[in-house]
Length: 126
Length: 126
DNA sequence: TTGATATTCAACCATACGGTTAAATATGAT
DNA sequence: ATCATATTTAACCGTATGGTTGAATATCAA
Image 1 (spheres, rainbow over the protein chains, first blue to last red):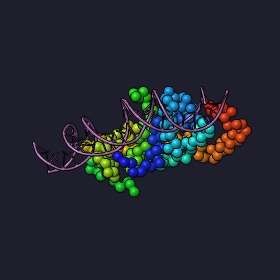
Image 2: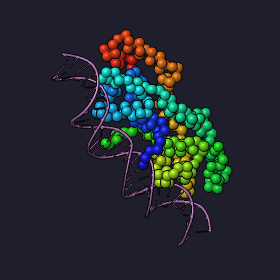
Image 3: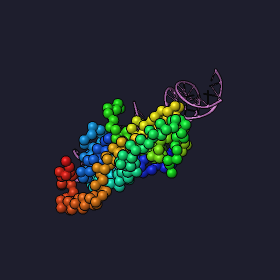
Image 4: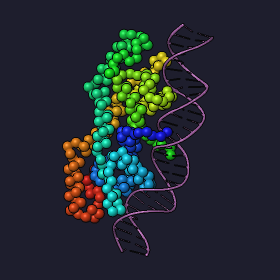
């Protein structure tokens, strides 16, 4: 299917979509960890853990510093901030009860005009 | 591999990991949309769009109201809030320059004792 | 009833994902 | 040199993902 371009958010959210990787990030929040330390809590092979860590790295969520034969990983907060910011856009929907307000308006509309006669998006965009 | 249990965050982040679905959510931020309205901006079949919408639904990110032959979709902010909250845990890493502070502390430690002689996680977790 | 519209379902396809095991690589210790 | 430790690579496997097309379903309009 030939990927044309992948947004950073694709990679970030994909990386976050796995519980193992999320727990690894959580561990990293406690400070630097080596590959084996990151892998230890999980009942998977080191090779599998290595792949997870690569996924986190690819998303920029962690950085690796090779120190001798061990690889030190540390959290890289930037991409997490991006994801947080992206979600922040929708914050208004769950704060200030704006959603409840809109729900009320919708219900009123549904009663005022017959549900199907009104154009579905009645100019509330752009 | 037999999934034993899937955390809501798995499904939510997975749903957010696709650009088409993210754009659909964005459209939904402008108000209710039908399936075909959501599908319209994309060069994919309606069947494909239907699958994307199901993924969003499965993650609880949208709700569907069948109204006659059209399906009205609306944003469901709860799961977005969960994801936002999850990321919020890491906020301290990109605000208040706390990460920089920790970096400095790490560097000091690395100089005080030889990097490998110290146990890598020296009680700074839990 | 007939036909158009809105959406899903089923079957299929190529690629990605998450896991495995076994071998390779690189460093550290003796 | 030898051996152990830390990690990656390669080959493989089953399932999931994202797309397709074509047929099915359901509703609205004539």
